[in-house]
Length: 135
Image 1 (cartoon, rainbow, N blue to C red):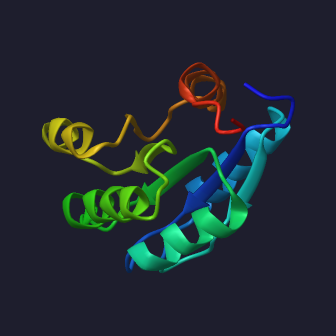
Image 2: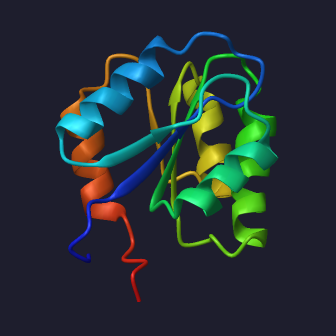
């Protein structure tokens, strides 16, 4: 990995209006030394990908509680690939039933972090799995 900090985009796709967990994660990752951009609530897949492009991120973390994860998250992964960002690590968090995780993994979501996951666990996963995009 290059000398610059890992850049993480935290996004809230869909109509979900609860963002406390996303804000806690954003603050915690900053404390861990990451550069974090938080998009705010009610982002469309296109808005998330546009922000990822503009911010030149290494990771897109998607926080979702609305139940639309099987629709929105694969769409975001596909749009990232179409935009030339297939090397960006995509993770998810929120209320996602365990039975839905294999479909998300197959769609390209690298990890799903449920409620109560320690910030350090997320940070360690990101450090271990982010790809060097500086080349």
